[in-house]
Amino acid sequence: MNLLPQSDESIRDEILEHLNKKYDMEFTALALDRGHSELLLCHVKEGDPEADLVHAKRLVRDDGIEITDTYFGIVIREEIEADILSILSGVDLKMRVFYPSNDYFYDNMFDNTKNYADFKQWIDDGNPWRFDVSIILFMDDVTEGEAYADHVFEIIDEAGFRGYIYLTVLPEEGYENITRTNLNDLISQYDGETALFTKSVN
Image (cartoon, rainbow, N blue to C red):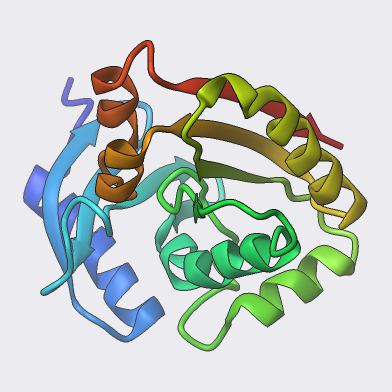
């Protein structure tokens, strides 16, 4: 009995066609993982395959086939990051914010016609959503990090943010070299020179 009647190529092409139509742009496949669902790793053609990695999931249901993806996270990530930076503008430290854009699968209503304002309105309409963000602070003395972390968490809570916050304090060299793709590597590289704090803001 053939449990995987469709070829990898046909599954890949079906998912790519869905993405191309949904966002009116061309995507390039990187890898396909098949099991209970099919997961395609891809990116927008000419995009960065690491920073702009997209997960697209194809699931066969009793009522048909559903394909969802993470690309809308890339669409909205810069505005989410700018929102957090604006909320924290009173904190007198150099900081960066990164939203994990390939971690969440979005409702298919969020296509090339939608933006961050539409997404916020959808949340305001009663749809549950929690944002996870990484906040990076530069401090000369990382031992002072806990007090600043508590202050950051308090400000974000008062602003109505809901989600999980990963706050990392890095020395200057690490802070200057950080990108959205090398955060975990740099934390390991500067082991012993960093301070890490987390908070679930409800």
